Image (cartoon, rainbow, N blue to C red; front, side, top):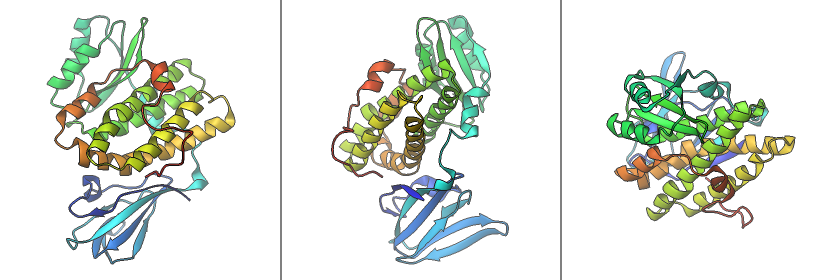
Length: 324
């Protein structure tokens, strides 16, 4: 197995909320929990119901793909680190089918004018999503709806040109947190990638645009705020170096070697961000900063060529940097 990332040390006071909730590693993921100070209680679900285990200092626990587990109560001074590993026996060959379906199976709604767009925004059912197509720029109306929608509305712009604007529009059943939003943005990128690998030129354009916007979110909004709040500079350098490699190999997906590198890197990069880096960013820089969250959720598409060509932070040709 290859290690994708290693968390900072967690204690019960600084534990990300997701680790208190039932969750499970993905299909080809293993998680390794290593106790620095104990005792630490963990729970997992099996056929017999909830099982409990108490781990002491120096002990570790491997958590298999699909195992639903959570951290329980324990000694106030207990601490641990969490590593994410990928099983190379199932190395990424294409995005997961469930993520690819996010765009392939989305219903398409065409809003021919602002009045039709207002109706779509007002009537999209909670718990649903759609591909919204308009012949005009819908961003101002969508931003206003985001502000008025109690946080349950979200968008992921895919195309913005003279011919057409395309947006994945989501109406969640509850307010959308930043961690959830960023994870779905990863899913949108992987869904567009699935189409691009099939030779779909429009999906390739969406892939370029969605990836460009996502990297701007991280490099120009999240990472600077994170570093200013005392975040880990080595993590940011490593992630930005990987961004440069993703930019490079995106232009070479026709080449089998570059395509494999891109798939493997994107797969591991997204996982360590969602499981390790984003919770740290949210805990340090985003908690209570509504302006930063709003800036992320409101961001429209950047000029794709410029955003893909230039990394705001990091240098892929520089010395190796530590990664999460």
